[in-house]
Length: 299
Image (cartoon, rainbow, N blue to C red; front, side, top):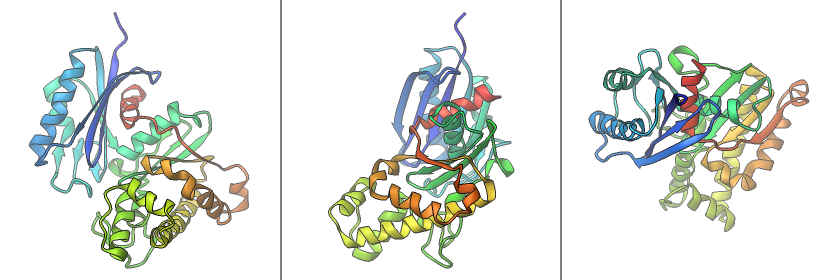
């Protein structure tokens, strides 16, 4: 009998990535489909169902792991809402999928899943503790110590993107003002650039193209965001004392534009005793669906 595999589902603001993996991290198949339009609870669940049916017909599956932006309830398996998918409200993912497929379903914040996958399979996997930050549409965080993922209350721990960096600052997608995510994320960069220029850029790549073209407004936005990130990370390091600080996600593709400055700012701000052992680096950008599948094998 073949070894049972796990399905991992990575839910993002624009698409749903669904993959099949074994416990060593080997990927067997990966599907990537855009979020349906219009996006409703029903159309969203139907899209997930379709991907699972396709994969379940091909492979022996032991369980399903899911990662999505929060806030969420990991115990009941409910996506409460998401700043990047505002039309979704109280989606009962766990109940729906367990009823339909008769498989165990494990559900956590997407950044927690990314952290677990990176800590289990990434280049820094043999260290005692890892603080992983996901830099993409928004900013997420996860903390793993001795192989154990810190979850917080109902899976809402390490929401580093929603730590305040500017009192009464720019409006964040969460509804509050001054969050890190409003200054250092794809949405943050694009919104700040639009405020200054009234030009709506399409994506992070177009923003970083402006930086490379030495557009001073784009450079100033990136520099301010980098300082905001450094201050937020300083707070997190002083709280958690990780051995490694790992950045993952699409924005790390432009690491050459801000990475050296960011590391320098962080290292000059934290306690020397913590700086001596801290490793800072870019992760392998492992599939978020691999991190979600890891939930199955961990439990």
